[in-house]
Image (tube, rainbow, N blue to C red; front, side):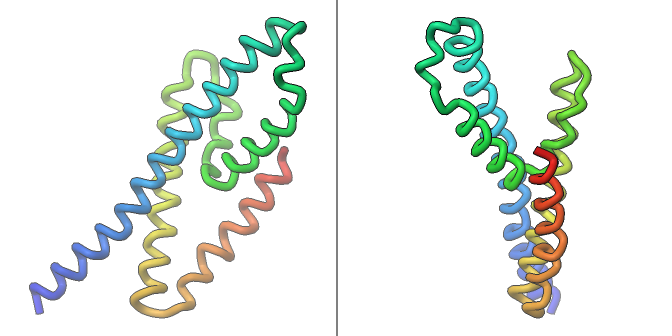
Length: 138
């Protein structure tokens, strides 16, 4: 019985740990994409008006990137009010909040797989209104 519980807990933490790891990887990738995007725009678009033809649909790309970021990294909203010089601390707080969010979603998915399918509905019922609210802020 004790060995069975250890095996169950190991599978549980391995499964939910993948969600937590995803909660770290997604913000890091999106942060790199945003920094690259901002550097390219400032170098070729904002600082040099004669090169504006390179990015004729710049607003459309930014809108798509904003939507993807909002859906995959909802805690990025914490970075909107960051004080200058405090970017790394704000990013760390946002990253930690995203890890917790992904971990909780992973726990409910695990419970939905192992216990009862109704557990799948809980993250959906919470996240869909949150996403709707976040996307309405744009």
